[in-house]
Image 1 (cartoon, helix red, strand yellow):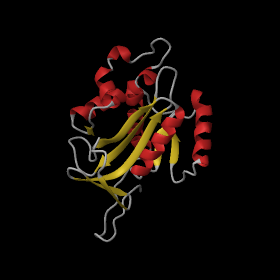
Image 2 (cartoon, helix red, strand yellow):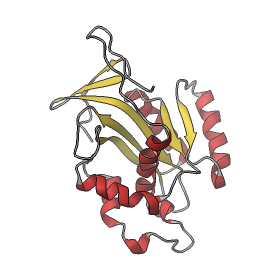
Image 3 (cartoon, rainbow, N blue to C red):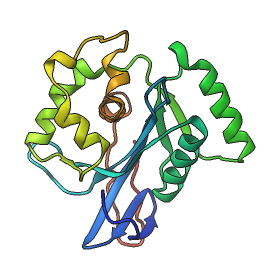
Image 4 (tube, rainbow, N blue to C red):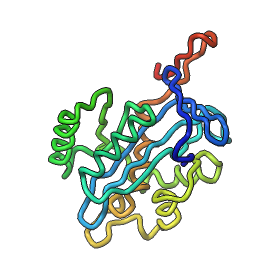
Length: 209
């Protein structure tokens, strides 16, 4: 993650961040995992950096992440991060056993008058077993930029033996940060980002085409 109090400037769909150096993020997406018995809720905000890496045109940067003990704390953290980073899309599993929490979250958003964000269901997305090889390849080639935090810790801990149900808990529940980040990666397969051509310096528009 970048420093806590950078200078952030919105330029169309781009986000310009001035901290130690100037960085431009073309797209920002958030993914979260609901709190579960014995596991806190987790969220991660990811930005696509406007520069090239070895295997990907736009490296993934962890802009914000955190664990929260209960649903209300998670809701507050998610929306605060969405607003701070001017993101519009967030991803979470809605179906399965999470329907009631989703209804509760929708009611909370309405109560707090939160608009301009879209929650997309990840129920049909691939799980950790499918995404972990891709994530490890991205790390090897420098396509993920992150500092110490839950995601980096869980990625260093997860092993082949972990990629199975244990004590009745699927791997996604035991490694929520990896699961949430994997959903971000998978989201670009279904909802790809394409950089729009900039006509001139007075017309700075980028986004989805």
